[in-house]
Length: 299
Image (cartoon, rainbow, N blue to C red; front, side, top):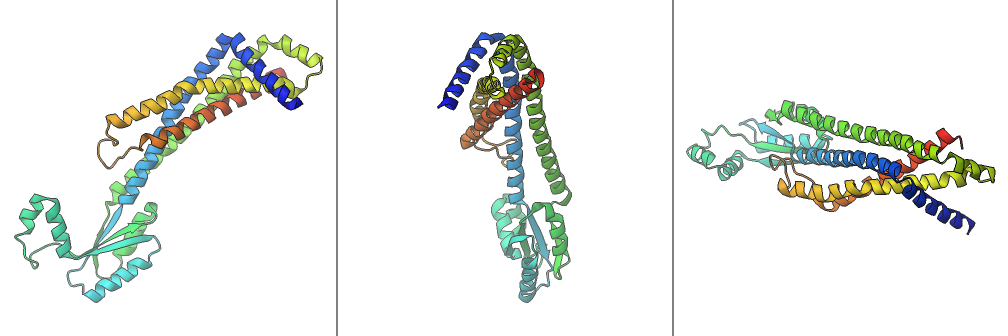
């Protein structure tokens, strides 16, 4: 019961401190708000980049074109060898007639050109389309398939695919770095801001120490105050996350530039990001307050 009473008193003191030192509190809240807006944008960008990469990886296909003289037995042997490659997830065999019909269905131009070609004249080949488990090993898997007997040529977009995946991975790392850097900056800003608040209350804290208040009793109101500042500082970033991202998604119809780059649907994504923002705000506020008390008051 004593702990609950002390906690209740600490919460009350923290709220009073926020109100009493409103200008300093507003400065802290403003710092947290601005930083958390950037953090929220960085988080949303990072997760969307991850989503882009996953969507591209799902569509990554190695196409193996077989020799024209490959028999049914040869095809079965090629399929067996491909299946034995550890990175192969699944594969689909298509005869050149099936490839021709698919191309004709997809384009009127292809239909006009291909319908006049006989099977002997057609440059098309039987193909095996391969999906891989790990797109990072796409090149290595393609090289293994290329070495299989009766495989004429392998295509998968080589350089372009590798560069695209590398670019997305780099952007993802940069956004993670931005988030971490911003959180560290926010902690220092809060430490310096709360340091001013603590300096203005040195006499009050000195009296508390003289009457025998423990370190825990003195620090708790400041930590709770940091938590309150973090919560208030999270409100605007959460509103921007929820309404801003939803408006952004609707404006671009759920994708950027092409259907290939799909945006994550707002729900439940915006709620997950909002939760992350408020948790970061609370933790950063508490850490900043605790550090300020420990470093500057020698409590």
